[in-house]
Every structure is written in C-alpha cells, then in structure tokens.
Image (cartoon, rainbow, N blue to C red):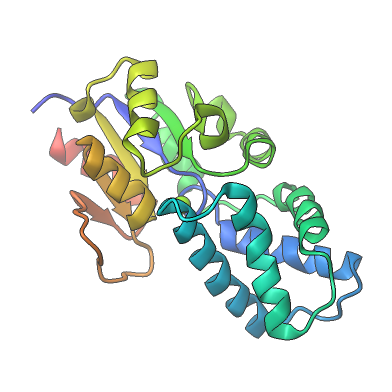
Length: 231
Ligand SMILES: [Mg+2]
C-alpha cells in the first residue's frame, strides 16, 4: 500500500458544527423577519427538511438554487409562516458564517497533523459562505487549498469533483484520505474515486446504503493514532 500523504477534509458536520451554527443563523433570521419564536421542535423539522433537500441535490434531482429555496418553502408551509423563501434564504446565508462552532477536537487535530500531512478541504457549500467560514475559523491557514463545489464546477460525491481535487494536488487516490461525516457525499464519493476514507460518526449511527467506510471514528482526536496504525 502506498503511504497516505494528503488529507481531504469535509467541513460542515466534520470540522465545524454546522447544526449549531445553523440554529443560531435561523433564529437570527426569524427575529429579523419578525416571525416569532423558532422553537427547538421547529428546528428539528427544519433539519429534517434541509437534509432531504441536500440529499436530492446529491442525487442530482435539483439545482443548488432550488435546494436553498425549496427547503424554506416546505418549512414555511409546515408552520404556516408568511415570508419570502428566497429573501429569507439570502438573509440566512448572510447570518450563517457569523458563528463558528468547532466539532470536538477539530482544531487540535488539524494542527497536530500539519507537519506530517498536506491537508485540503473538500466541501459542497455555497462559495462566499464557505470562504468566510474558512477565514473566520482560521482553517484557511491550515489547508493547502480549499476545494469548494461552486468553484470546482462539480459536487461531491461525483467522480468529476474528486478527479479535479486529485489532479490539482498531484496525488494518486490511494495516497489521499477523505474524512467526512456524510455517507451519501463524502464516503460514497471516496468509494467511487477509490480514495480510502474515514467516516466521522460521532453519534454512532449504523452505516446504511451501498457504501463502505474503510475506517470509522467517533471523535476526531482518534485520527492521529489511526493514521499511525494504518501507515
Ligand atoms: Mg459534512
């Protein structure tokens, strides 16, 4: 086996706690639009609806713009809220990067691995939102380059996305390692591209779908030891 030299990190839900930041962003936008209280129950419904629309995007069933707007169309319909989904989404996108919440041990782990590995980010998010998050979190100082789908012109899990990444960093698939929380985007994408992968599974969910996680961790702090073991 060839030695792993490049780590390809997912951002949302892997290095940054997107759900925590998302909840703060939605509540701020609710206040701005005078929509009343956004309860925990409403946020759980939003999480479910949002995940469904992102999965549709990953399956190529809708565009990025439709994902962004339709999730709020469905959410507002569920609660009978009167707001323009497109305008609401624009405001929300502005609030979203204002809050940075790291996943446990994320910062320590990327710092600990800096000397031995080249590290890159591979993310499907919206370009200005992701760029700002990377800058405000300081993660942009860790990564050699940030591959953001809007800029790459393809989304995870497509082969096209990972081909662009591998050729840009000059790396064979087996010399890279994808680390991500999403089975349908990170792990499936790694499988399709023959890149080894680590599934970050903090809540210990069962694996589902036609995917294969080479390694699984519950905490990012396990990664340096895992890398020593498998090299
Ligand atoms: Mg993720």
